[in-house]
Length: 115
Length: 114
Image (cartoon, rainbow over all chains, first blue to last red; front, side):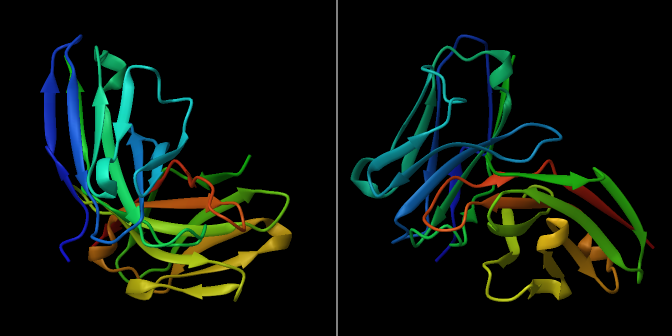
């Protein structure tokens, strides 16, 4: 088990371009979460999946953002028409169970810079 | 809505000194509480969690935290700081019971001075 992996680790793009990030959770983890972290802030919840079903989306997730988890394994987060305000670290986490106290295992994140 | 407040965005301690990182939560019912650590260029790692089983929770790397309902606090401590403890620490909360989203505090950067 190699932990949660995220690709790419860094992405620089121009405003208006689309970007896609990938997250590979720990195998057999049912739950997968996406967070956004800006400088000086803690991670902010964006969305989470139970297997392939997207169960909750934050109001932070505007219609330019879309996340998928086809087949309940890896997940992708796409941002369309990027804006400078989208610059942040995007974190992915996974957990085995469905309890509120289940540990979430985090990936190293994808740092997005929008020029 | 659940929330946590971390007092002090930066804390400096000397190597060997006591580490105390403060976290207060806002909830009408005792929630689940967590402390995570984030080293540079790495993902967050769980240090410890409170799930109502015991008020004093021991975690990894010699850290512990005490849940105090009367003070709505969950402060993180370590008796003797080590250089390797330098990192950013996040307190987090989720409502007791079934899963709901985790809310993180703004973080405290710990500097350890040799």
